[in-house]
Length: 289
Image (cartoon, rainbow, N blue to C red; front, top):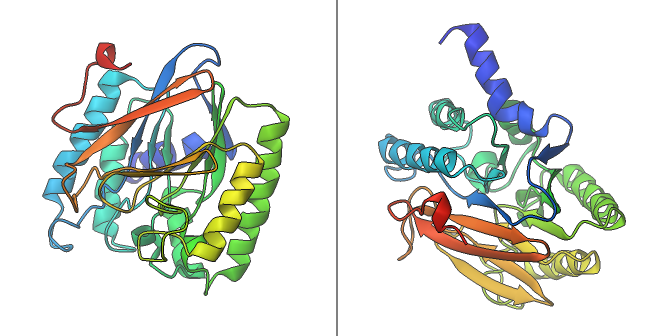
């Protein structure tokens, strides 16, 4: 691939969906519509970074299915790659992501493997260079989407200023969404706040409890009712004050009984429903309800 085409691909995959920081997709506010949530393509995980042929096969299938289904948007909730800064994994992820139909808005979320478990100024800069912003908002019909960098919740030790900036931005953005009276304010991140119970113990797969409760109460204050995440490599749901925490299984390697796949989320005015499909059971557009 020559230099011009490589730069063009990076622009289309990384910058175009979020160039303004508040992109807009094609869904209408009143009609029933749907989007696709993917998580953890995580190139390199199947073989501990020796190769990524399985991830290539799975992600190509997922993007091909998305192009056939034509959702209002596709969002990938983190761990795009397995080894932070691995350029071969980044290049392969981008190559396949670049196959998304240009009429379908495509959004990406920063994961802990993309940034490192303790993100640093250097890893944040590298992510932003390769993939774009790590927190931002977008709209799709009656949905206001908020993308968060959950690694800044999980371990902000080396990037406390960046964590504070995101927190301030989030409250401003929630106020904006509420003021504009969006029917659905939906949060997308990589690490879930909790898996099944908001009071569960701290662990690798959730956000520390003290900060978790602080953010959940903030989201509740502004009317957020759905948070979509990944990271667990299997499916899980829980509820706190009417906020549904939805953790979605992986496009890449499973770590439980749930097979590789993605979630189809339907939006009907203020009602949001969703279902996880394995990659070998993706419905036709007519089969989405």
